[in-house]
Image (cartoon, rainbow, N blue to C red; front, top):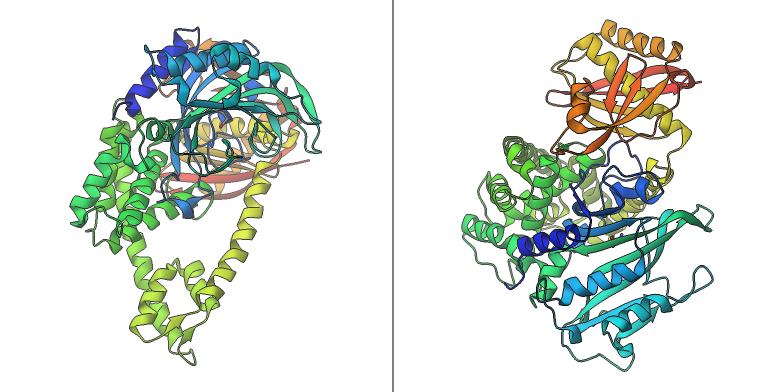
Length: 593
Ligand code: SER
């Protein structure tokens, strides 16, 4: 492999660091205090407040490698290109340079022998064709021409192709995309980079963010013009090495070898899909479990996605005849692969391995229970076709995979109405889809509604009160806020008593009634720690952070936003106290006016 993953990561960060960019750490995969999405899905996501104008402590030029999870196309995983976890390389201008520098630097990074040294004749680009919202981007096209890209390799495409936005509202703008010509002949006279015949493969996307799209579809100019570029690491390594599939890159070699060893089967056309799904899902699960914020398998939100990934991997592993404990063995390979880049995996290795084994065990029990239920229902079925609704119920209620239903049915001389199952499944998906789109609206990412801001402030008061009542072993393990309620996970070994819950509630309300002023100072993280502020310190040495104080009651490191005075909050009510996972409790609470 000419361009390895480590090489690309290092060269990219060095190139931009040499050009005045501060290298920032990847943010967590779990967006803190942001109910709008389950996972960090793009490099820009953690930077949205700064794209909207908030001052970033590290300045106006940043570069990073952001961990991302996207599970929208989970069924496609195992083909040549889909992954649920990926790394996004990016460079950022927060109201600093704009398209000219951005394009020139991209060109230099790609073609200079000191960096990637790519053949300029194989680079094509697209620019925004223009419409009623923004003009045709001749300016960017001219910069490309000045770099040496001839007019015939510059394509003008509409918003559908050359405009970037995360979701439906927020910072956005026209982009220029950079493509690698695979050398395949054009599929026809109109072949261009928007075509999926495989001639052109995208490697880099430079977004020139200058608008904030409103819910009503209008575009307001942003206070500052930004640049957000994104280069998918796995994809770019694949494309630039002329490989057919992302699964052929170096990052997967060890895991695929391990899967072959554990299954005693070779990676070929018949086993490829299953092996790739295992390689993908275990990698994502490893990163989710190993994340500094971290998730554990559960039945809701991130935990549910994680559970689904692990179970799907276990099922594929079973189908390949892999022994119990294989999933954890593959995770160990990844922990090693990423040892120097993502130290959190090594730090959380025990948790990763334990949780994977625990979930595998639970899933085996589910399979046993599902099988029992299968035999119960099948005895009542007239004829020899298992209705789609029955198969779906087994899947939905018992977590019993439909493939297992088909297999068992076949053994008993039955078939399964798979079309009926798919219909039910699609109905169900449409419902959850609507749910997840809902989540994208009105999040803190979009400036935060007043309700979420107040609940966020209440979360700080809650944590301070919990530590007063239960002791310092209470540490934040997760937080999620919707406009209606807060949810706070924290380390604590047993259920809280009624009295403890009442006391915590009372302390928070007392802090609210005291109308404490809320102040914020920016300090280097070591200084912040010395002030006694609590919060996730993580591996952010030297970074400047914000410390929010609420009178003497609470002092916490946090990005904000917050209310100005605790007196704005209303009445704090704890609605639930329950277990979240082993050693972690969960509180749900509301603010009532
Ligand atoms: N936001 C753009 C993307 O994710 C560029 O980083 O593709």
